[in-house]
Length: 238
Image (cartoon, rainbow, N blue to C red; front, side, top):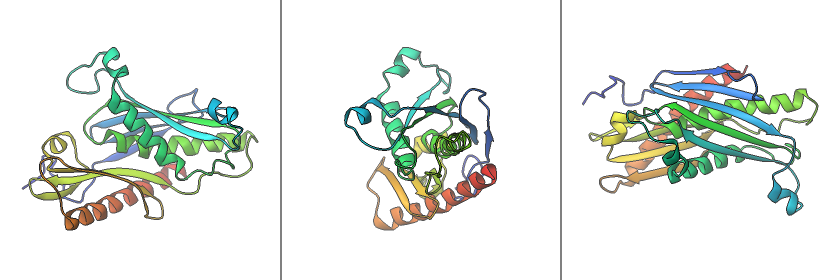
């Protein structure tokens, strides 16, 4: 069955990443994956987080906050509702884990970098777009620290990107948009490093359990899709 977007099963949506879109942030990136648009900003605090200072722990920290604007979806959500959104808190933790997996905290020095991922428009895959665009913002913020003489070495060890895949109408497909995500029998998100290793896998049998062959194929789709995104990150960051 043809996908609503007329894409092949292994085809990602059109992707663009525009850097330095925020004049104040040390790093910023506006990522567009099809109809999903996310503004990612990286802010540098020249101090460790309080919990690290209290525990006298060395090195810095990377964290993230994810949110959606009230009219990011077809129906407006009030700001009060969004502030109580447990989904946003869970996604924020996912994004933070993804970045920390490739950052050497000791080389980062006693600095805290916060990546804010604000969804301007949602059409599926917002957490994946946030990780992919947020990584670009993170790299730019680290370059700012190096240029300012705050750190001597690049603490980032590898690239990071994320993409969704799922079982839709008995087809295993890559990079689900909203219409596909709503009807997916299995929904998965893959966070992958530049060397091809998986950082995190989230997979749910929405309608029924999935088997080993299906998850293996979804992992293959996810890894290939993330490599395409990482190739684009490299072009953007050259």
